[in-house]
Length: 193
Picture 1 (spheres, rainbow, N blue to C red):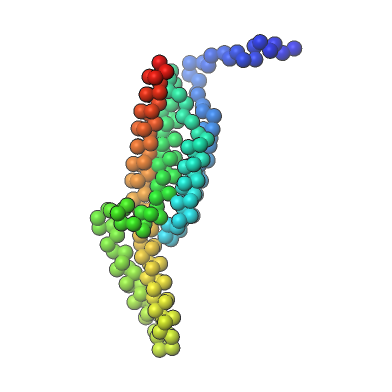
Picture 2: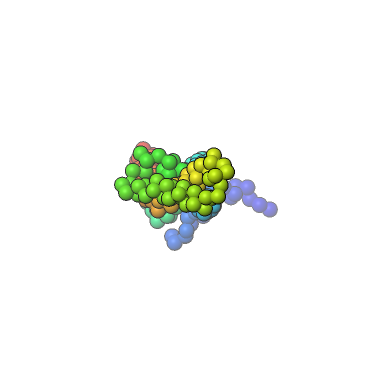
């Protein structure tokens, strides 16, 4: 039969073995969900992207734990820390994207937002030209169409500009998360040791 005294014994892992973390595949799944969210956010970044980003951050921070730092596991720890940091950075960028698009103080890149209002004015003029026959019949409808098309053009322009800079924000968040997690784990390791 089975010897119950031996159930808890584990043989040491071979020197070249790869150490995995429970839930490590979850990081991959969350990263893929974040990429899918970015791909589906066509046109202007919508507030649903913020909801998805916050949800993914909550899932990864609740259910994923980095392996404890140990001298023999340095390579596995760095690989897990890198994956964790990059996924958190990606989720943070998706969370901030709608805010970056709408609030100039959060996205203060000089010269990047300047052309968007001009595109809105151009779209308003283009709408007026396309609907010239409507001007004499219903001026309010023409004004509404001009306003809607102008706002859509500005939002699309800001979305395109924001998307160009999202990797910078994501990388910055990843570096901050990685450094913070590494410092915390080292301090925790020293306290235990």
